[in-house]
Image 1 (cartoon, rainbow, N blue to C red):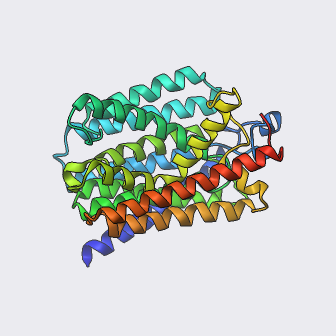
Image 2 (cartoon, rainbow, N blue to C red; image 1 turned 45 degrees about the vertical axis):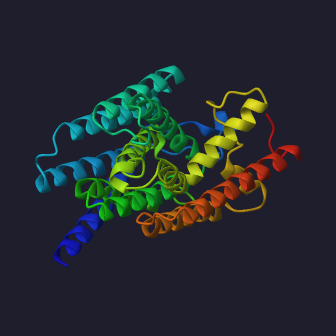
Length: 348
């Protein structure tokens, strides 16, 4: 009971610190990371220009989790150093992009470097018998998730709400596996994101920016490698592991996949901004931005709850039903996007 109280107080402290830090940054750094969205109205959903400084609060939430975790277990060793190095590289690369609009190839290079650091530190998938396949899958997964969280950050509250739900889901997995340090990182990041969401919900006072989306992406990907993608500690099959992973990250995966398919079909690059995301397509149907953010957040929380009860199960029919559900969600979102494109609610 005392441990629960201490952890609860810790999370309230992190959430309050994140909220307070963002308020201070808004007060003293009003122009830091402010992007002129009116100049890029064709690829930005909101016509307002807001500071993209939310990632700074995430970074301090991560540092707080690491420092507090070292007091609990000071013998964590090299994996933590590699995780910190990848997180710092992702954050500062994003910060540079928010300030200077760096080139896409530079971002990709840094993302690949972050993935290689995590793999070297042991944060890679354990799905296949051949290690080189695990490394290759992990490289694709980490780079892909860093871009997916960034692409999902296209409407107030969406990326933050989804990331909050995923961190809670990951913490539930780590708690059941008795991985205290990893659960602490996931919970502190969830608290930090929640503090940010108070200022990012419709209508947002600030955005997380690339510094935030890149940091969240690399941490989510790394924690997934340490939990849902490790069949040895879960004691489940690769198929079951992947079905859990996709359920937890379902909405970012669906969004990135349908955008990539639609743009490639239209001969466009998937790497540029646009108004063709799953969130935009729901808005074209008449849903308000706040409603879409709430739906995405609640769905991700629901998926996390399902995983909490599913993680100990070895019954394949549970996992098959999850895969069917995942396919239904993707096909529905994809069909909506194609219908909106046909009706010229957006064009390429």
